[in-house]
Amino acid sequence: MKAQPAASHFIDGAFVEDTAGAPIEVIYSATGEVIARLHEATPALIDRALAAAARAQAEWAAVRPVDRARILRRAADLIRDRAEELARLEALDTGKPIQETRVADWPSGADALEYFAGLAPTVTGETIPLGRDFIYTLREPLGVCVGIGAWNYPSQIACWKSAPALALGNAMVFKPSEVTPLGALKLAEIYAEAGLPAGLFNVVQGRGAVGATLVTDARVAKVSLTGSVPTGRKVYAAAAEGMRHVTMELGGKSPLIIFDDANLEDAVGAALMANFYSAGQVCSNGTRVFVQKGLKDAFLARVKARAQAIVMGDPLDDATQMGPLVSEPQLDKVMGYIEIAKREGARLVTGGARADLNTGYYVQPTVFADVTDEMTLAREEVFGPVMAVLDFDTEAEAIARANATEFGLAAGVFTADLTRAHRVISQLQAGTCWINAYNLTPVEGPFGGNKTSGVGRENGHAAVQHYTQVKSVYVGMGPVDASF
Ligand code: NAD
Image (tube, rainbow, N blue to C red; front, side, top):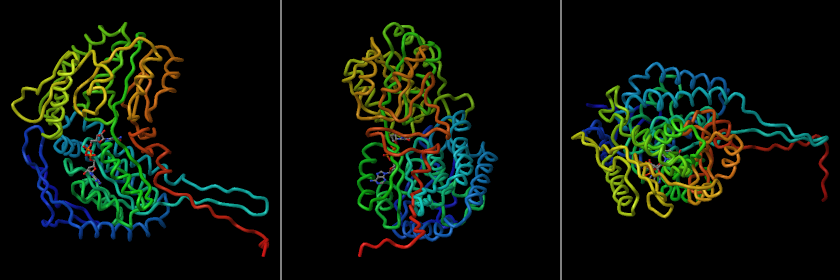
């Protein structure tokens, strides 16, 4: 199995290689096989990418928004035309089942391109009358934006960041995760084919140090990171030095609160999707499932039965519902958390071990019950297929415990009581919430976190504020009233 791209980087409209950069091996996590060999970007290549972006952005900002939009729409069409090839590449890059990558990853990316292509030409300033004089405002691009991606949704992240950036007149230098570097290169190729001028979307590969170099470069106006909270703290602090704009899409330990009156099968289905989709490697996962005591036994019985029916196997097999974790270090981390949960007294309902497939970094869908707020499993992000079920008595208790975390990415509520649903959601400290649904993130809706889970929002109209800045222009229409 090979997925070797033409070169490691895409800079100023062309694939570029420099073997002086440290090697990066791309592993197919279903087998451990090396599927591509890349190199980190050297300082000279990083400089070239930023210089190209700065040059190209100056011209791009002057292009009429509908003309920019047409290119993005063409790119969205190319993504859809190549759906199967891209779904396969994403499965190889991440180890996620092709069942998922066909419907979630690139399709969501194409939606973002189409959405921001439609939105950008509608972005306007305002006129503020002052009697004789007036002020008008312009919404201008920020300039060169840096995008840094996590490994769980590599193509979607590249699209969610680049689509609003480009549509609104910015350029981007994107650094994918070193674990999943392939999708972003494909996106660069597609943008070029769609007619995006050279230099506007550049991809440089590398580990954290390459990201850190980008974040502090004087040419950079904005940094958008998707990653963990510890990385977010470093990147936010580094960006602050130059007063750069930031969007931080970070981790979570999100609560999913299920009341006694909820539809059981829907609540179970949502809890399974909120913990086992992408083998649990989703930032907004509902990893603290609070179940009201009256429903607890029935809920656990159904969760167990449905979790045990999940089909694991080769991500490229159409029948596979859950693939391996993305890498061996991630496997070790998740198995470590499972051991801690057992040691701390959580009750194992199902799973709890590596899946016996003789290959790859597979972990069984795992459910722990009787989890308490103090346990490590209830406090730290595992990023694997591990569901923690906690039980509760009252609404007030559930809200207080759901909020007792440093994170605030997402939250969900299942109940048949309409007023309770809205009342509970209004009190939850989370940026992205669901009622009787979970983890649906269409591009139309703003997405992002509160508290340590992040700042800023991706998607929706909200993203416009994060890729533009307001210029306020006072127009004097009469003589200057000078005091001196
Ligand atoms: P990570 O924080 O280890 O790495 C994220 C990216 O930051 C990588 O590209 C990495 O190379 C880069 N990086 C690391 N150190 C850096 C530094 N000092 N300066 C600049 N860049 C640096 O995260 P990960 O393990 O790749 O991804 C998993 C994490 O991402 C989880 O915590 C998950 O919750 C989070 N995530 C959040 C969202 C969201 O939208 N909120 C989405 C997906 C993943």
